[in-house]
Image (cartoon, rainbow, N blue to C red; front, side, top):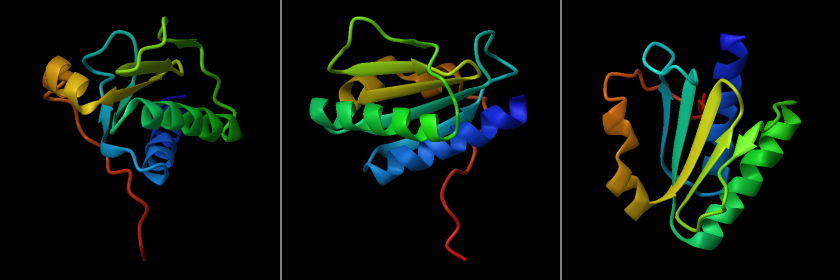
Length: 119
């Protein structure tokens, strides 16, 4: 199952990139997080961009038969969280990302390369 989560997490990062998400990070947090195996963190440049990223992530997840189990409520114009079981996707404005510093909480977590190879 962990391998499937990894595959989906990488695909969701690529989907966010396709929608011009910025500073995309995929962290393997299974050893330090009691709630998830992977975190995908993406910066949006505006509230409408945040919305577009959320829709693209949901579309890409649907193609992979990954189901969103929970989502942040109420909907924020600054930060959205989508829970796919072994994957948490954080879509954040730059200000929110700087303020909350999720990467600092998981500073020892390995970062995964998600970029498409251009071979």
